[in-house]
Amino acid sequence: MNTPFPGLPQTGDRIVYVREVHVEDLPAEVREQMDGLEVIWSVHGADGRQLALVADRKLAFMLAREHDFTPVSVH
Image (tube, rainbow, N blue to C red):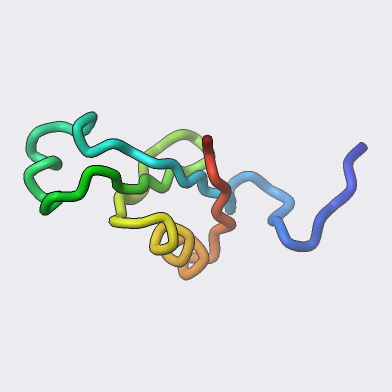
């Protein structure tokens, strides 16, 4: 069944994926910039390319929507 849903784009190029990232898993030069945060959020394109790192989930979704992308959570 392939029923279009008006809330999502019909092509994958306008969808981004948002996931939680533990700061301890990041490279040292990035960890130094995290100012005491333990968890941040990463925004990825449909091809898996990392587009942004942000401080919280809400900001990740707002950033995606501001740039005309539809954000989707990755568990």
